[in-house]
Amino acid sequence: MMSVQSTKVGFVGLGRVGKPIARRILRAGFPLTVYDLRSEPVDELTKEGAGKARNPKEVAEASEVVLTSLPHPKVSEEVFLGKDGLLAGAKKGNILVETSTVPSSFVVYLANATKEKGVQVIDVSVSGASSTLISGGQFRAAAGELVLMIGGDKEAVERVRPILQTFGKSLIHMGEVGQGAIAKVVNNAMGQANFVAACEALAAGVKAGGDPKLLYKAISICSGQSWTFNATIRGYIEGEKSGIMNTDLAYKDSEAILQLGKETGVPMWMHSAKLAFFEAARIAGYGDKPWVETMKMWEDMLGIKIRSGPETKST
Image (cartoon, rainbow, N blue to C red; front, side, top):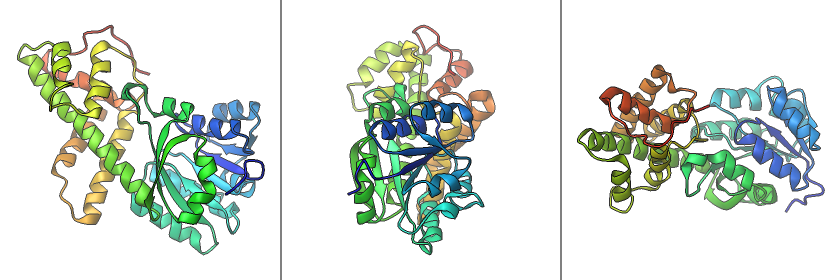
């Protein structure tokens, strides 16, 4: 097990989830070097004691373990394997931890690409599980309460466990590299499908004259409820401001489950429809808004009112 005092940690990607994770690692006492394309989050963490690098290569050169939190596999590939990427600066025995939501096949590709240099890759998919999804994963990250679904060599996982425990409450080793990514893709696909199905049915109920709050009250304790329904629908009805991921990322998640279905030969009829919905939502201008806000599409199309609480603008 690595000690807090001796392990040099790097972090690339200081976004909504990455920055609070990096901050928790730093506050736990790990020497931390960070990089992001934007200067603001880097400056925040350097003021708290982190070192900063000019590119991912420099992060790897200064670290034994590097974590990444990035928006898309194409970005991850450049960060890991580009000219100034992590592999260019990594040393034999280093561990690269991919926390981004990416296809399992992509993580395996990264692991194979780094193997020759003696660098290990593990995938640590994160979920912001809480009683209210309206708050989003960044709040669970800041509280150190994320669920971590881990794929990779058992010894490598144990070596980085003290780091992971700084921001993860539940750590589940799913198996070999790529299995953490599979768990995350499946989880996100199911949660978002539950939401879209709930929106359609609830819209029909309201159009037929039902009261949104009473429909929610009844369904939340009946067989139609789900964790996602209970965590999102109430917040939307009450007009709460959401910190959940934006619709562009939900669209990416939908692409990921379709890719998994293609790779495994599993038909994806419902998730194909869900992808089409999120594509329509992006065209309608919801791409940079929390995906829970897409419920307003039914309100606008049908001339109904589901959100009965105070109106709040998403950011």
